[in-house]
Length: 375
Image (cartoon, rainbow, N blue to C red):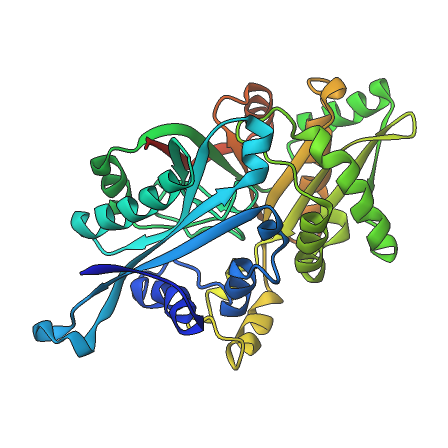
């Protein structure tokens, strides 16, 4: 077995292809479209790489009977330098992501060692992850809640990955809590939301698709204020927000995105999306053709949603604005036929947001963990 750096298009194809073989037979894994993965990894297409660098590696092993001509991939990892994170937090943290591995500690150790060496050579003193490639993308290792499929833009992994990490010496840096809820909005919550909005004179409105570019500009204005000072937070650049908005626009439902206003000033926004993973599960190859036809067919009958963003500017936190936006999204989701929803992730020590989710009747059903390893 040896670790090989990805250095050309063929190597990148093999890096992308490994999970589709690795998770074959796992009914819970949701295969992403390969073209989307390629965009995520491409410095030419993903504006994340305007302030970051990554090196991808694959673990190769001999095929049957040790024939070198039949070498196969048994694992992969990426080592990631995120300059925006280091500027924001003035630390020396490097990252790893896109980790996939057979159940073999020696293979996992070799992958982790390789990423650690690359990061240490860059001057980092800590390796953190998994982040694929950043905290604004898929991040965290699933450590609890292995019996249900992931929602849109959330990772999934076998339970033995936890043992591979802990045996290598990773320590927990932070847990990310994910909530589930569903059904009709409880009457007490609806009543409380109505009274709160009237007393605080807070108004809500949906996303206006006819003014989409202006709405994205408004999100830029709110986003970096609302999430500042959160653990691990890295501001999104204008180019990154534009890129994300372009990707999500085709699946956005205007009533599931809301803006909160106080005295005419925008003070928060929340966004939920239909759980497209319900449809993607029916395209195991992840290829655009002919698989996209199945995806489009099943996308007509999605009854699950994920609240992936919900933030309030600092001076209005703790005033109930978050609960108002939860209520808006929940009410409009039910009206559109969404019977189940996921909220999160939320940092384990974000007391206000966790309490708000609990008060609304949500319950924790999955936990993801971010790990640190000193270099």
